[in-house]
Each structure stands twice: as structure tokens, then as C-alpha cells.
Picture 1: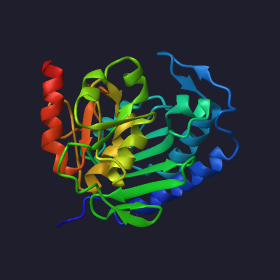
Picture 2: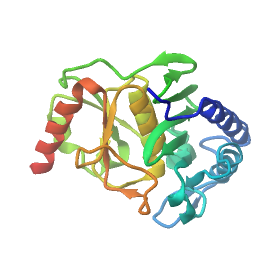
Picture 3: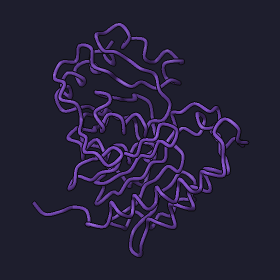
Picture 4: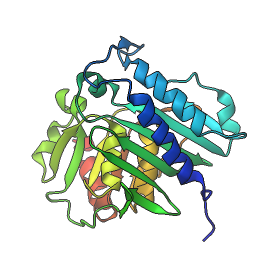
Length: 264
């Protein structure tokens, strides 16, 4: 089968994550000043420093760029290859010193997330992979879990959504829910086989999801929208309705469960 990614793409992702590590050395999670952006989202100097590091390492001529911390350039819509990043996904956790934040990188080709990198400095986890090469965790091959029974499946839920009561119906089902911060980090853990599924039924931006979605796809799992169709990225409207990411063996059961909850 013809490769979708280029052989050096993973090297570029690793290099970018190395630069992110260096940029983060100047900051201490839990002891960093933040200002609030529109929408009550925190922004720190660390977000901007990592954004600059990633922008230095990743895009080349003819490639697009979409980042939470960079003004959007509509010319990306004309590019086949686009880098979509969140310099720090889970900035709120970063500011509070909760080890559930990460650096997220995605390479999208013709709308499809095909390569990615998730770096959790606090947990010493680097998850990198592509649809051509599979996924590694700290250099060791990993894949989505082989679970085929939704009963007892570990599902990573959003701490903020749980706090708002949006996960109440799921706590009454047979799944096991663990609350967690960063969207990208949750997706990375599913790709690494450390959880069976994660989803959110509320809007998220492309940069929250793309890196982890690429990894879940590369690890044999599936990532879909709330219409149960494969998600597409590098859209003019970057806000997604939500997403569902699962190991392959529980995908259908997860769809059924979510359909039941949404209908109720």
C-alpha cells in the first residue's frame, strides 16, 4: 500500500517535541502566571514559547499551519498537508499543577489525520506514530486495546464535563469512567492501549483533537464525529460538534451506548 506520510515526518515530530521540552524548561507547572483569553481560557507564556518552537520545526513551504495560539491563516485551506497543533492542551491543568496536560501535534493530509505526537512531560510519556508506521510509547510499539466487551471498559471522561453533570447517565452504565483534563492526552492514552475509549458530546476545536485522533487511527482504533462518520480536519470552521474515539473491538457498542444516552 502506498505511504500517506513521508519517511521524515516522524523525525520532524520528534524534533518538534524535543524543542517543546526545551521551551518548557523555563516554566514550573503550578507556579506560572496566566491571563484569560476570550471564553475564559487561560494563556501563559509557556503556551506561546511552545507554539514558537513547534512553528520553527514543523511547517515547510507549501504546508499549512493551524494552532490555538497563532492567528489563523485561511491559506491553510488550500494546502494538502497541514500541521495542527495545541502547544499546551490542558493549560488550566498546567497552571494548577495537575499532571494532565500535554503538547499535541498532528499532520493532516487532505483532511485526514495521519501522523501525530503527544508529549506528557509530567508523566514522562511520548506517544508518536503514523498510519504508515504504527505508534510508539517512549520508543516501544503500542496499539489500541484488544477489548471487545464494553462492560468494564475504561473510558476517559472530561473532568469539566463531569463537574457540569454531563456524564451522569454514563455513570449508570457498565463502563468504568476516569475523569481527566486534556482532550489530546486522553486520546493519546487510548492510542497507547492505556484506556479503551474517550469521547465528548460538546464542541471542541480541531487543535484539541487532531493529534490524538491521528494516533488512535494509527494504533488501529477509530475516531468519529457524533454522526459516527470519520472526522475530517483542516476545515474552515475549526469548532467540531464533538468526537468519539475507541479501540476497535468496542466501537459498535460505544456507538450504541451513546445513542441510547443521547436519545434519553
